[in-house]
Image (cartoon, rainbow, N blue to C red; front, side, top):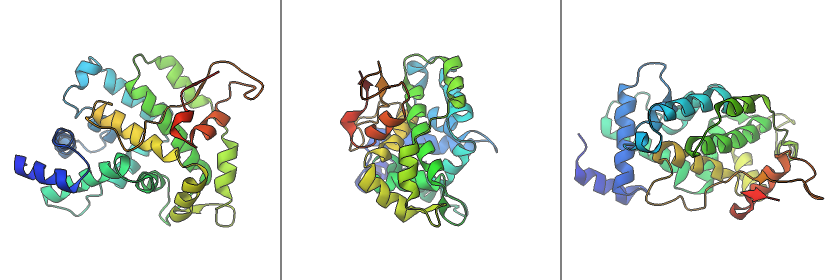
Amino acid sequence: MTSLAQIKNWTKCFPFDEGELEIILRCHASLSKEKEGGSFLNTLAHSFPYVFFFLPNDEMEIRTSVVEEYILPQGFGGKFKKAIFPVEGIENEEEEIEKLINGVANCCRREPKDSLGVIFDCCCDEAGLADPGDLIDLCYRITVAAEILVSKHMDEKRTKALSKELIPLHGLKRSLSEKAIDGSKVKKFDFLEWATATAPYIYACLPTFTHNLIFHGKSTKLHHEESFVNPELLDSSNIFTSLDPSLLFGICCMAPKLGGKVS
């Protein structure tokens, strides 16, 4: 049983207040009871004490299931768990909890490079390399998943159809591919360097997703930047000649004020 004194001590070590730490502690308690093969994302989402107030009945479970099956890449939940909750071989409960707190902090409360590192870890192979296209696709899919988790209404049919609507994102993929080894895969350092210089706000997809998943956007303080808001083109123009979101997403990755509705 974690004491209040320990929670207070963690507020000095990690970028969370007591209320947020209590939610992360609930996440750990739920994960400790999680059955083999259970959904990591669903477990995190249901650890928020008022989840049924914001999304009644089994709405959150429906949304996390739809997000996992139709929006995020296959196996994302397992890779995300491994990236932020690496507890293999750890038997001490307090150390386990601190691993989870640290992992969540890397996702949504620390520097952009920490969030980018988690994104990379969710894409890389055993050699520590990742496909540029997979990295860009994951970032985009995370932004879509983040919106679905907290939107007032979810059109389930429309959401499932999104999985069949492949977003080209050729510009970002081509740009990142220039950092690839032999034109194939990139190292973590190169991805972080590219993102910082070329798409400095692309990292924000993960803090937004994590806040919406664990805190449901209701934590007492936001991450150090504004939430990532996917651009929505209301009408075509001389500049944006189609409803293809690829160009808009690339622009939104430049700065926080470039998301939202565009006409």
